[in-house]
Image (cartoon, rainbow, N blue to C red; front, side):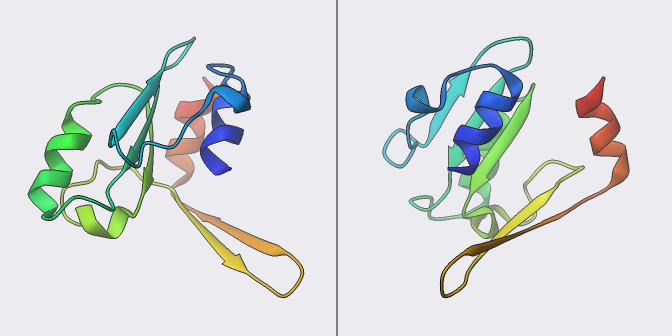
Length: 105
């Protein structure tokens, strides 16, 4: 859902067209900016994760299971944590202001 919302916000794809990269590992969408949706769940080493991330050098990366790529992920980084509550979800977004300025321009 987060990747779909980001894709719609960037106007690179309609939400219904954004598919899970679980089996392909990477799905990319082009528009005014590039969006790369990466799933590291099936990756066995951090260096393998780094190779996947390197395949998408430009644009915005949305990475599922980022802890599997620790030490190989690009900077600067925003972290979006989703916490499931009884009847709702809480999203916590953390990251440097410099990244926000890059996205806004």
